[in-house]
Image (tube, rainbow, N blue to C red; front, side, top):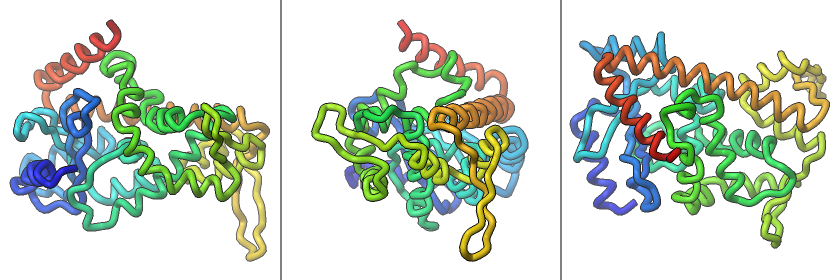
Length: 304
């Protein structure tokens, strides 16, 4: 991002309370995309009407309040979230809302708590989840598309209010950024013999054995593995130090992939529904209807 563009976006922060973390994302940051810039910032809101908004976000939604009706230089919307909610979702995918956004390229404006480093756990888990869902041979673009699609699996908006080509547009428009984001994690997988680069057109080949599948599952967040254990059963193992660990019972790679996909779809579906209701209550019926109609019009255009 150029300094002038960064300064322009950062100027928005001057009218807000102090924030610990702030990133910007959206299509006008990248020439191949056409959406407006989305901006979400994190801070604790305590007073006045904002207290009611955050209560709605916490009790009804998924802990984040987006306001699509506040503009800054005609191209901005923002959201607020408590830092502990952000960190918890990054590490555990308990709501898989903000963590899904941070699996895609963003530009950091403020990072006082080193969220970028914390997010490494999220990106590593995203690679593991995507590999489970991919065949033995695939391209880098396939991988990034699968990572990108994780947060849209089960999303109710994809049925009627989102561009059907959204994932492909995000990946094609930001391919270089995806590469720089995930290069260390692909190299890590290569070191563990889970993945290797090929000179062929399909330039990535993964080990699809049961042992590799178990390794990928073990890299998923604890809350996902917990749900998978409920569906597939668990196996207890005793380490040399006497610590008991509980592993997901995996009969085959396909079984593990289907189970994880089921868990993630349900999680995303619940979060997207709760966030939609929260937005409706916080924004009001008229504003929410206007925003939804705009999204639906865009989705309809993508299908025509």
